Image (cartoon, rainbow, N blue to C red; front, side, top):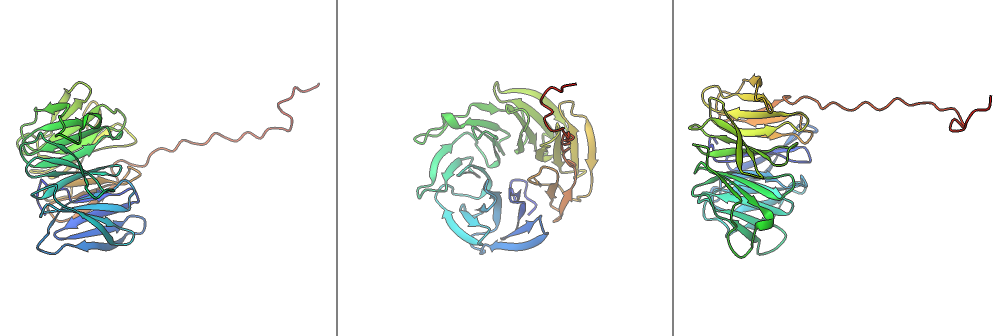
Length: 319
């Protein structure tokens, strides 16, 4: 669906790509290029509005337009449970942090769901006034970044969260002038967050999460739909809408354009990264899914040459 606010693509740690097309979630196994159908939701509950792999690469969460979230085991094609009661509208964004699934909804509420327990709602975050369209946990699992249709980015701290009352953000970042869906935590600098603004904003901004300061803002010229960091080099990939519908590879921190990648004929709504970090999948409103070898192959350190030592070489020779 050509909807900026949904998150319909995810690449799991077991190298399987999930994509939601209407009411159906399909799985593509990158190891053998096989495709399978995980589930088709009936019309009363669909369409699917978000998909997100759990860290184990086996379990997947499926957010629906009817406010429910289904949890599935992809290995056995079996539904494990349905999370109900935490939202009253579509679930367009989700993010995992260990066994906790964080979900965002249209009215701006963010909920932590502990999928192991019956009463799954364990924390709520109130700060956004409109739909939450981006959610990303930091690598440490301590900070949560959220982006909304209210043009706001919030950063929340797990250690300051309370199960009794809505959690207060540690930073409210108000510099964007359009909806913020694209969020990406930097893999080589833990306090650095990148965010991208929609059609009325068109900027990528970089934030120091310790201080809340905006370190840099770059006008990209078009709607920013998604952001991905290169795991192996200091590079950032952005995907865009009108007019070029392109992907742009940037060098960080200079933000020099290294490449502009064309091919899609409609806005590139979603990007997902392979587990090894080298391949990027992009999905667009043109109903195509494309794979790009954009981040290259990581350089493997050459093993040190083997030294064939003589027997008793550790002893001094007698001449």
